[in-house]
Length: 392
Image 1 (tube, helix red, strand yellow):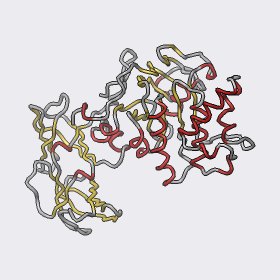
Image 2: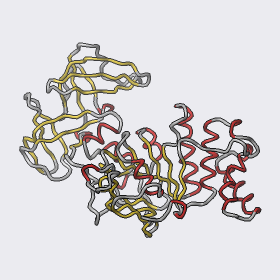
Image 3: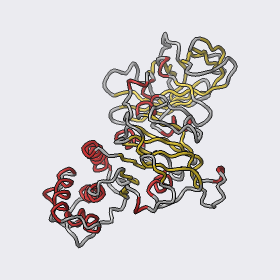
Image 4: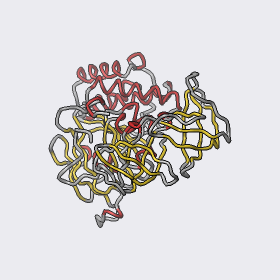
């Protein structure tokens, strides 16, 4: 899939740049022991950018360094070209929204939103106008006189967002702000956050461990693992073309198949699976015959049949588990190569077969739906080459 068919990042210069940022809480600066191990990013003006990864991967520490709550052990953090290392958090033109909204229970919604402006001694008329405008943006104008306890969780989250946005920061940082909400409300608030970000037009940097959340809201996603950025790109690219085995496994469900390239030429390779079966794979990048590689293919890209199909990418297997999921059925298949594979078939009557446990089946897919993985983080750029606004 061509990169230019994906959601493009903003073309303006970066709002925030991280250059070889390291955070070692021991203070020695040793990368192997650091929580953040040399992160390089360029985040565009007006971009909704997400830091995605499991607990302990360094995403929240990275966000706190951008905010000024933590200082990097080494490296640079640039806000519109100005180095912020050593600049106190209250001197950075950045606001942050946390999972706990920390609203003042004795103040009205309007007074909560106006609190920061009053501390800055902004004129009363301007405070009133700015509070009214931002409450309209977050669709809470009719709740201006209510107390936080009279609001739902989603409404309280929007008050916290309005309180941050009314200060007109150059960037807004959000640390898993939807984590305390139930599933349906969280899904609704994802769309609300994206709408609000588009309306106000400022840079959002969003930390989450929820893959669906990042895919729903982001212009681009940085997937982090063990203090490194493994891949940066638009959601569709990260999902469809994962750079590493970790990204493939962490973003949604993916099948990994190992083998050796029996042939590699002209952008096409033949993968020997070791049991007499071979499949054709597209080669993107430099690969040579004899190389051990790992291939990924998404479960929804696979067709399940009881007879072999006329396709260059197919594997035989035995159905071990069948799980009905409502809109689709999940099949777990033990393949003849020894790999366990998952297949999602839609429950819309289009399935070629509906096998039961123990049935012999064939798994087939279009060659273009295979993707060979690299063995190292694709986005572990050097200090002189931060991961730029152009997705890789």
